[in-house]
Image (cartoon, rainbow, N blue to C red; front, side):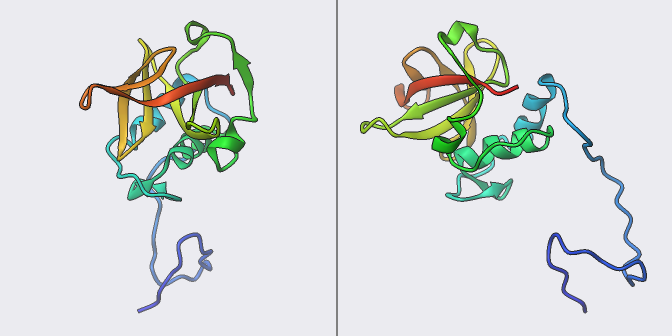
Length: 156
């Protein structure tokens, strides 16, 4: 048995005779494809530092959704908030824009992707969809605001 590390290159004479039948992305995709890729992570469990469907954190989720559409985001929520163009009002946002949230000390510590009709998809306990307004993210299960909105950025 030959162990193969993920991401490794396998020589042409590989005994596995494996063929990839999936799809792949070349170049940058349209913004409307971003949410389709993000929805693939729905219900993936939260894992600090994670970037896979087996466990993912907030900025890892946004980074991977953008990456699979051909766009580069930095790793942390604070770092990602330095990218793109700030919007003045939530009403100016479009599906695929990023919403950033801060803690009580004013440090940006959470990020999600804006969806249509005042919804946001983000990783909090799991990748989930919640309501968003000018105050922040409203969780219907707990009937409380879980995150305070700081800024919305247009990346694409």
